[in-house]
Length: 210
Image 1 (cartoon, rainbow, N blue to C red):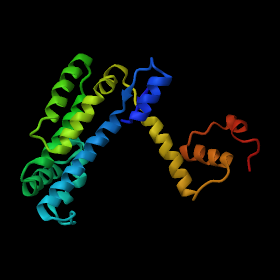
Image 2 (image 1 turned 45 degrees about the vertical axis):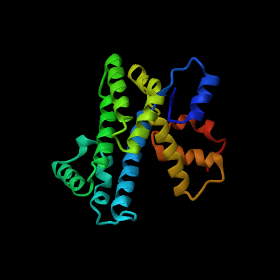
Image 3 (image 1 turned 180 degrees about the horizontal axis):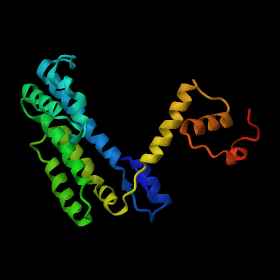
Image 4 (image 1 turned 180 degrees about the vertical axis):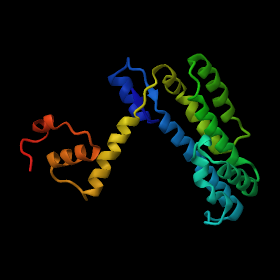
């Protein structure tokens, strides 16, 4: 069973399906790491300038690059990222948070479960070190508390990405329609938005098609 880092969902799984192997979804883990990067960046900027970030601030200019996967950065983008970190990150705190995110992503390139466990043990311990920014330490503690669910991915290789995609499709369909009051019409419209409609199932969708 895949889940985000929700203690409530975890408790429900443990109570209703105690024999289920729980897997912390990789998407939500990387999303959390990116959130910690942004928190670090905003704190550092506030400490440097005594205010929120402005459009011209070096760290603000690379806020999106910080959350991109390293392999997706062009050479120009990588040079820009490194250069502006040097210009506006005197304590290397934002750089440390970025490196922590990339190190976490590296965990998912390991195919051997035993090797992944050794890597995770070392990484999570390192992230909780007192020399790290407080946001990185918090990330390390969260990862440590979910270690078994994180490592379960290396044995199960399951994700709730398709479920998240369908949920997003339903939300977008509803938003574009400015709300739907009829469930049957809502379901038809969602199926049409998703494509690949099986018209043989139309009778199961609604008794009448207008």
